[in-house]
Image (cartoon, rainbow, N blue to C red; front, side):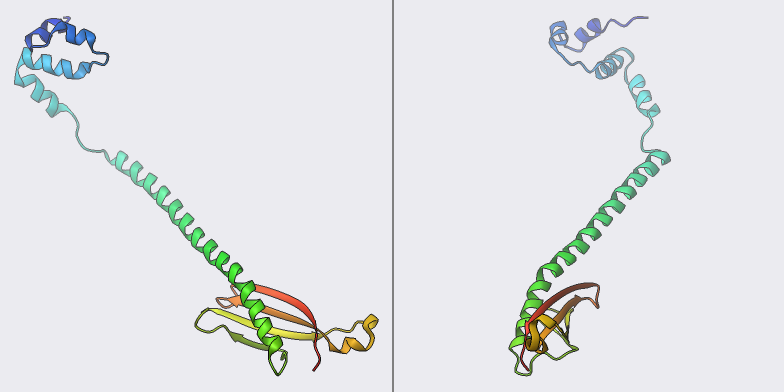
Length: 174
């Protein structure tokens, strides 16, 4: 049996022109309105009662799996960002600290002591330095070669997790 929707639309107070002029018509809503007029409350209530509500267990598990994958990737990205930030901060500060410590050691009255080490105090917690010197013998320099030294200075962070080394040569008279 074919339902004449235009006839029922006139009964609920809508004109035929209104339905023809609409570009998008929700046929499902019109069907429910017309069924309400034709059958009364019984048909509408039974269709609501028969409709499934809520989520199935499968839908919940799929949603949880998607959330777990997303959260694990976000956590990994966050931890990688923190590690990169620590490394970048070290490789920015370490050259400045090494140059400063080298300048302190060169201007010191006792000269550079081989095997000396220390830390940078409360301003830079976790940073430490270690210096070693070695005499360099170059025959072409002749007698000056006894004052020629190689200085190795290393700056480390978090118990040698990150290490920055600097090597320089100086002519130093003792």
